[in-house]
Image: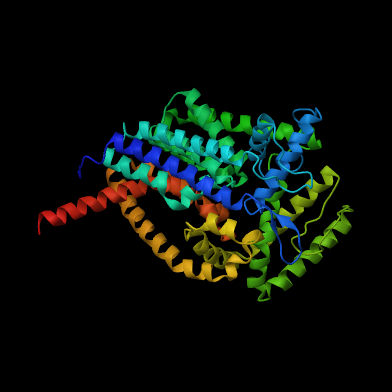
Length: 473
C-alpha cells in the first residue's frame, strides 16, 4: 500500500478547514460583486443576478410563507404551490429569525439582507457532515483512500461552487454524505434504518426527482442483510413514508387534495421530452410537435370543462387553474399524455435521451460563475465566446476524472465489498435515468458525492501502479 506522512487524519482535517474557509471567501466575493439589482437592457426590468431562474421561485415562495405566518395562518396551510417542499421553508425560517425582508418596498429582491450568513450556515452544515463522514470512513477504509475521497468531496470545483450559490444542491449534499456513511457501514438495528428512511424523505423534500432513490437503498439492504432484510427494509420505508405523510397532510390541508408530488414533476415530461420524441418519430420539427400537443391539450381542456387561464399563449405556458381538483386532473393529463408518446416511440426516446445524457455527463466547474455573470436564464451564455472557449476544458477535465473513477470502480470490485460497490454505482447513475433527459449537467453534480469513493480508490490504484513501475525501472 502506498504510504506517506501526508496521508493522515491531520491532513484530512486541514483540508476540510481550509476548503470551508475558502468557500466562505468565494461566497463573500460573489456577494460583493453580484448582490445587486441589474437592469434588463431590452425591457428595463430589474433582476437579481444571484436570484433568478428556479432560485427566484424558492425565494418568492419563502416570502409568501413568511406573510402567511405573520398573518397567523394555520401551520399546515401556509404557502402556496411549490417546486420543492423544504428549501423555501428553511429560507423562510431563516429570514423570520433574522427579521429582515426578502423583498424591498418596490417588490424587488432586497440586497445586503443577510445572504452571506445564510451561505455560511449552509456551507457549515456541509462540512460538519464531511467531518462526520471522515471520522467514520477512516475506521473502515485505508487512510490513503480516505485522504483522496475527502479531498475530492471538499474541493472538487463542480461540487465546491454550489456552496456559494442559492441552488438547492448545497442543501442536498449533506444528506448524501450521511447516506454514504450508512452504505459504508450499514447498521442492522431498526432505529438507524428508520433514520435512513427519514434522510431519504428529506432528500425528496429538497428534490422531488430523488423519490426513487429508496429503490437502490432497498436493493442494498436486501443484498447486505439477506434473511434479516425484511424488517430492516420495512423500518426504512416507515421513515420515508413518515416524511411523505407530512408533505401529503400539508397539501391536503392547503388544497383539500391528497398528493405529495408537485405539479412541476408531472409536467416535466410534457415540456422537455415528449415534444422532442414526437418530433423525431414523426420526422417533423419540434415546433410542429409542440403545436400538435398543444392542440390536443386544448381539446382535452374543452372536453373536460377545465377553466384554465393562459397568459403567454405559448407551449411552456401551462396556464393557471384556481380549482385544485381540476388542476390535479389537468396535470395528470399532461403526465399521462407524455408517457403515451414516450412509450409508443421507444427508439426515438432512446435516441433523444442518448444525446441529452452526453450533455448531462459533461461536468461544468464554471456553472455558478456563468450563472451570475450572464443574463436571466443564461440565454446569452450559450451564445457567448465564453461558453465556446470553456467547452474544451470541460471535456478534458471530465475525461480525466472519469478515467480515474473507472480505475477506481475496478479497484473497488476487486478490493471492496461488491454489494457496496454495486449499490454506490446505482446511486451515482440514478440521475442519468431520472434527469439525464434534461441535458443539464447541474443535475449530475450530486452523483459526484457517491463517485468520490471511486475517485479515492482510483487515485490509490494509480499511485500503486506508479510505485510498482518505478521499482522495476
